[in-house]
Image (cartoon, rainbow, N blue to C red; front, side, top):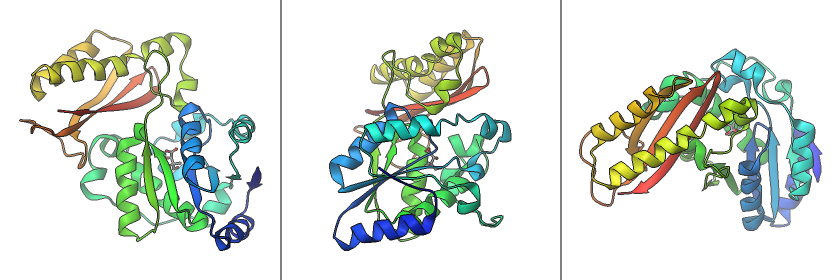
Amino acid sequence: MQIFRDIAGLKTFLNTWRKEGKSIGFVPTMGALHNGHLSLIEASKSKCDLTVCSIFINPTQFNDSKDFEKYPRTVDNDLILLQKYNCDVVFCPTDDIMYPEKTQLQIHFGYLEHIMEGKHRPGHFSGVGLIVAKLFHVVQPDLAFFGQKDLQQFMILDRLTKDLLFDIELVCCPIIREEDGLAMSSRNQRLSKIERLEAVALFQALQLAKEHLLNGKNITETKKIIYNFFEEKKSIHLEYFEIVDRNSLQSIEESIQKNQQLALCIAAYIGEIRLIDNIIINY
Ligand code: PAF
């Protein structure tokens, strides 16, 4: 496994492969790798000749400086895992390399930045767009792999790729869950034992909502059931629960169309830790 910390070295290495006609798959991460990330590495390896993973905790996408400081940093362990999964190349730049000067650039995504994650984390998607655009310029992959857990991020990056004419195919990979259903996330590492047990409530709520919707409850009734479900869980603060169209992420307030694909999206605080999850259902 080749590890690069500078852009020039990485570019030279990748150019040699590109000249030989090899396809490049890219998995951008912020480290603290878990099986969700490793499933992206596997997906890339199954579709591309060469897999590049980046590890960079991007400061511009954290709207809360405490969250940035406390974000798990486990690079040594990440490198061991990547080696074990036969990742070919790892790019671990420093802040100075990715942001040599204080950036002024803001990226706006219209409607998508004002709902759910965008509404509750102002500036977050601008930071995500900025770093992913930089990484795409450096790596110039053929395919890039992201997890469905960050469904709204995937839609944002799809917009970015199309609007900036990146010739890159984005692949949205399924959520990987723990045995009890909790979606894998780097933030899970920060949960205490009790919080970890409580955190399964997000997945339980999504399943409950799915059951009620498919049994004919309308949107308002379903949302009420979910808000009541969390009323009883004093240690969890529900930030939002939304039922949106899977393709546009537009909120569905009234009637659901037959055969419409819905995304049920949730964000909640377990103590200080903010977790998100979603499921997609065919109505
Ligand atoms: O999903 C993440 O881990 C990050 O938002 C990403 C895409 C690596 C950008 O920093």
